[in-house]
Amino acid sequence: MSNSSRQLAEQLHERFADKLPAVIDAVGEVTVEVACEDLLEVATALRDEPAFGFEMLIDLCGVDYFHHGRDEWATEETSSSGFSRGVEAVTAGHMGAVTEDLVVEKPRSTRRFAAVHHLLSISTNRRLRLKVFAPDDDLPVVPSVIGVWNSADWYEREAFDLYGILFEGHPDLRRLLTDYGFVGHPFRKDFPLSGNVEVIYDAEKKRVVYQPVSIEPRVLVPKVVRGDQVDSVDLAQPVEEPEATEEQAAE
Image 1 (spheres, rainbow, N blue to C red):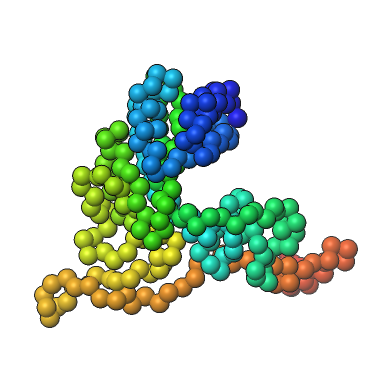
Image 2: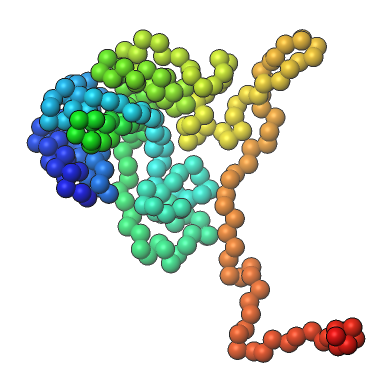
């Protein structure tokens, strides 16, 4: 952590101690978590108070923590420990040597969807990541910050379109990137890789129609080449070279 990030983390903890469940300072970046009911109050203070001065929202994105860090490639989950596979070994192909170095984490709560706000203070040249979790996984709703940072408009529409996160108070929450007839939210971890429907032109009806997707689902599992599948070479034994042909001997 840098001195600047440490100082910002201490200021945030001192100012919002009862409203920030987590203040994390890692690799020179500060991330704070705020409850839904406190988001607008904290966001307004971060923008208006001179000690912070985060007058610009440079990005807002959705995150789906569906079974985050639990299992392996065979499922939709990923590891939160920086490895390609989950912490808990559940398949025969799990790397046993790596497992010894992993610390099994406590099971995560049911919090699945989060909106992450990336803030910039032009006056102090500091950045802050503000995270808020939706309290309900089945109907994820978080407050809209468009009244605090007007640039949140299309960012919130994108998060709604791709993750299905509803932003309460947004004046025009519509899909932004997918088609009007699109079914589901494509960035959710449980969304099928091939989608739900496909669009084709029907020559008989002379118009575009939607129909169930005809692509066969497949699992994207990285191929692992193990030692027993590779021809081994004993370096202690001399390598027999092929006999030279008559033309090669003449040369």
